[in-house]
Every structure is written in C-alpha cells, then in structure tokens.
Image (cartoon, rainbow, N blue to C red; front, side, top):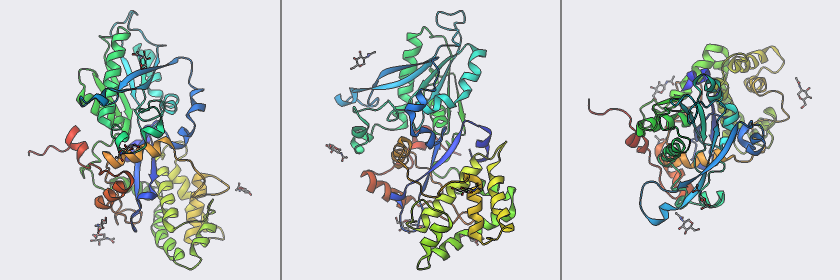
Length: 418
Ligand SMILES: *[C@@H]1O[C@H](CO)[C@@H](O)[C@H](O)[C@H]1NC(C)=O
Ligand SMILES: *[C@@H]1O[C@H](CO)[C@@H](O)[C@H](O)[C@H]1NC(C)=O
Ligand SMILES: *[C@@H]1O[C@H](CO)[C@@H](O)[C@H](O)[C@H]1NC(C)=O
Ligand SMILES: *[C@@H]1O[C@H](CO)[C@@H](O)[C@H](O)[C@H]1NC(C)=O
Ligand SMILES: *[C@@H]1O[C@H](CO)[C@@H](O)[C@H](O)[C@H]1NC(C)=O
C-alpha cells in the first residue's frame, strides 16, 4: 500500500476518526481501506441509476453462519450479486474455457464500486469473460436479520460480520454461479482492492479449487500483528511531503505545537475556529488535528497526475508566505484551501455516518486490528498505537474484545520456525 496505492487509480484510501474511542490524549484514527471514497457512497440509490443495463442484479439465499451446526446458523439472508453477461463467451457459447472475473465486495454497498471499478469491464472483451460483483455481508442490500437496525444492534447479531464468513459467502455464490451458467470449466479470477484485496488474497489461499488466481491491489495483508512497522503508513505520507517541499514539511511539523499553543489560550478554540473557518465551533484541538491529518493523508493518497495534490497543498502552504498573513496557521489554512478548494466552511461540516463508517468500526474492533500510529519520525504528532486503550475503547462500544492476533493466526503471517 502507501505510495504504491497511487498507481492504482481505483484504489483510494480514507480515514475514519472514531472520536467515541478517543482515550485521554491519544488520538484514535483507524484507517479505513476502501476502493471508493466514503462520500461517494453516501447515496447508493442515485448511483445505482448510473449503472448500465448490462448489469443484472441477483440475490442468493446465503447461510448466516457457515461454521457451526446450531439451528440458528441455518437461517439465511438475501445476498446481492451483479452479473454482466455482455462479454461472456462461455457457458453455451463457443469458448467453454472463458474466465469469470469476480469483484469481491468490501466495506461498503456494492453500488458505488460497480461504476468505479473499470478493471473488469476494461479486460472483459479480450477474454470473453463473465463479470461478477458480489456484495459483502452487512453492507448495502446484503443485510441479515431482516433490517440494518437489527443486524447492527449488538455483538450477538454483529458476531456473524467477519471476513471468514464473507469469503465463504463468496465461495458458495461462485460455485452456484458456475453450476447455474454451465461454467464448470471456466477459471475464476477474484479481484479486490484494499480490504477487498485482502479478501481476494485470503480467498485464493482458502479456496484454491474455486479461484485459479487472485488480483489484490494495495492489500495491506501484512499490516497486522506488528509485521509492518506501526509508523509505516505515516512515514510514507511524510516522505511524500518532504519530497514535494522541505519548507512545507517543516511548516507542518511546527504547526502542531502552534495549534496546541493557541488552543491553550482562554479563547483559543474560538481563535482556531475562526482561523480555519470551521463549520461548527471546535470542541477541542484534536478535532482540528485529526482533520489536518486526514487532509494530508488524502493528498498523499492521490498524489499522481494530473493534479499532484501534495504539490498543490504545499504550494498553498509555501505560497502563503508571500501574502500578508504568513504565520504558521495561516499557511496551513492556505494549504487546506489549496487542497479542498474554496468552500464556505472547513473541518467539521455536518455529516451523516456512512454504512462504511459504521460497518468498518465493528470490523476494526473485532478482527481488523491494524496497529497504525505515528512516532517522532513522521511529520505528524507522535500518537503511538496503544493496543490496551484500543481494546478498552472497543469493549466499551460493543461489550466484546477485539482479537488482534486472529487475522495472522487464521490466514497466516510471519513464518515462525526459522
Ligand atoms: C430464497 O428464500 C426465499 C425466502 O425464504 C424463497 O422465497 C426463495 O424461493 C429462495 N430462493 C432460492 C433460489 O432458493
Ligand atoms: C442483543 O440484544 C438482544 C435482544 O435485544 C438480547 O437478547 C441479547 O442478549 C443482546 N446481546 C448482547 C451481547 O448484548
Ligand atoms: C471563495 O468563496 C467566497 C464565498 O464563499 C468568495 O467570497 C470568495 O471570493 C472566494 N474566493 C476565491 C479565491 O474564489
Ligand atoms: C525520537 O524518539 C526516540 C525514542 O523515544 C528518541 O531516542 C529520539 O531522540 C527522538 N528523536 C527526536 C528527533 O525527537
Ligand atoms: C496505553 O493506554 C493505557 C490505558 O488504556 C495506559 O495505561 C498506558 O500507559 C498506555 N501505554 C502507553 C505506552 O502509552
């Protein structure tokens, strides 16, 4: 992931800030890894309308719990999948070995993905491929327990919301599709980005008889259990900024202490609110700092032609020195405006929580424990990942404890016998 993400236009990266998990002075940013931006997913209904008629929607009666034999495990829910037959040369067609390209849904409704993921449609004609897109359970229209409200109620219903169930859902549906469309001899290639790329990787590991291959783009399968250094993500973001402009990097480095200095004044938060033209008065300085971190990470994420957002942002920060306001915070704000555009307000606009935010919060608090933090080697404020406070936060939210070692225990990690 990291800088290489930028080469995959369809793989974007967003952060979610879980303020309810904020523990003492530790800011609590959990990375959310998504092929589409959360904002795009806000209104899937509108997006569905833009999907062409080539895409047909189906539902599969999916088993709630694949892994035990208690009666309640056998209950089912409708899982959505979408097929595009336009290029398909297999089945009854001439090319019995034509492949099936499968997009594995990730942490959001499928609707947004289909119109954005060009990889499948771009390659379908050349291979006479069948295109299949499957929605991840607990997102979009693939919700167990009859309603989203019931499904997300508490850990008793959320307990079936995990990656092992999800990849098994995909295996069942793919075996069913191969049977239904006379595609028994068609090789299956599973494809995903970010969390979806992890699923593609893990799918290929667990179901080599179903998938001949997997394409996983920017899938951080090694960002678990301290296999990857905790500061890895923010180090790369930092490097991107330094490469763009050393003075910009230095201004950002200095800005955190400046924010804290202003915030500690009696009317400090209102000064900061005014300076950064916030949509609502700031509750605390972390609100501003979290926002700035997100803006910087977002710029690095998309740092590719034609816009090179890091250069644009740093252009704002460095350029502000030429104007009348050349204090550190004015420079930072000029950088924000250069990146975000001229908006009526910044930092904390009114938002509704997306399905992705809500769902990914559970996923990170159960198995997707990605120990990501900052130390003094980055341009961000040192905010080391603290597993025990992370666990405390999750327990108070859901009443159950995350399993930080489950991903590596189940799917693999470091080989430990040499
Ligand atoms: C799926 O379940 C619904 C409701 O239980 C049922 O009406 C439908 O026939 C089932 N579809 C298939 C393909 O089994
Ligand atoms: C979840 O809610 C249901 C009914 O509202 C209750 O029976 C169950 O014990 C709850 N589970 C947990 C873990 O709180
Ligand atoms: C930015 O927008 C405000 C109104 O929201 C407008 O008054 C101002 O001229 C704009 N500035 C630029 C540089 O476009
Ligand atoms: C960073 O932290 C390490 C360990 O806490 C310390 O040894 C080092 O001096 C610090 N470096 C800077 C530049 O503050
Ligand atoms: C981590 O958080 C706990 C509180 O949950 C605190 O007691 C501990 O000192 C923290 N560890 C570090 C290294 O900051």
